[in-house]
Image (cartoon, rainbow, N blue to C red):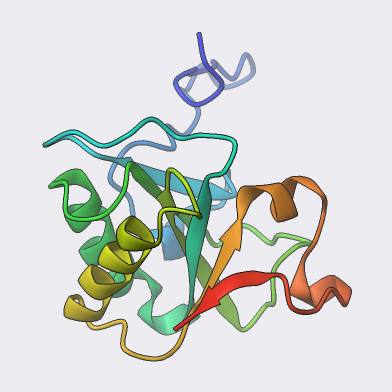
Length: 156
């Protein structure tokens, strides 16, 4: 069983815990840091050690609307393999005034794919410049709010 598909039972209340793959509004979820969306149509290369993600920082009051567009486009196969959105649960890696949506690509060195996904995000209304971060930087603990600079592979 992988870490994203497990559902656990709360022994005190006998209620199922939140399923991070169910359709929910990020502004209303408090018991999980993330909600996920995965591609349901078409094929896409398997995520690799060179994977990365576009980071879309969204004001709290707009997160539900923007996530709905990204979730739908991901599931329909217009973006990469998956996406995730931060929820209302406080996160020590986050800036409190904004939430983040991560749109994943399989390989940051595949510029055609990375830029194809960026173009699709523009069509969804994400027109301001956004950073692209390789997973290796995340795994190394590199975050802008911790003082790390110039960690983006792309910024467009």
